[in-house]
Every structure is written in C-alpha cells, then in structure tokens.
Image 1 (cartoon, rainbow, N blue to C red):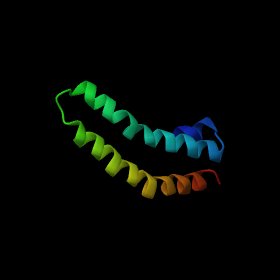
Image 2: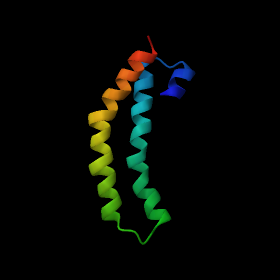
Image 3: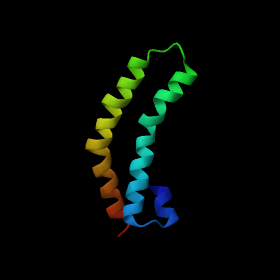
Image 4: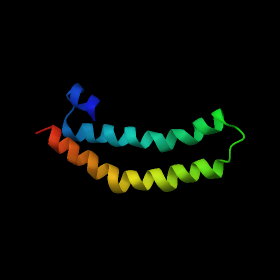
Length: 74
C-alpha cells in the first residue's frame, strides 16, 4: 500500500497491487517450504497456507486494503 501511494498509482491500480502482493504469501510458501525443508509435511504447510491465510485475506484483508486506499487517496 505504501509503495503504491509513493509511486503515485491510481486507486484501482493500488488496490490490485496490494491484493496481489498479499496473495503472494500463500502462493510462494509451499514451493519455498518444499525447497527449504524437504522432509517437512506438505499436507501441513499447504493446508495452513490455503485454509488459514487465504480466507483471512478474503474476509479481512481485501476490505481493509480498500478502506485504507480510500482514506489515503482522498
């Protein structure tokens, strides 16, 4: 959000950049965990990534990002 604001992006572009940045965590974590800890249980980190992070981002994150963007870009 802060980088979007400093870069002078419009509200819609800033919102998309923020949502995509927040989504990167649950997209990249399974691959990073598999590489960093090959003996770890993929059922655990994939489940946590998709069952916890994704819903929280949908339910809390996206509305929060939208409200902050509305506030900053006034």
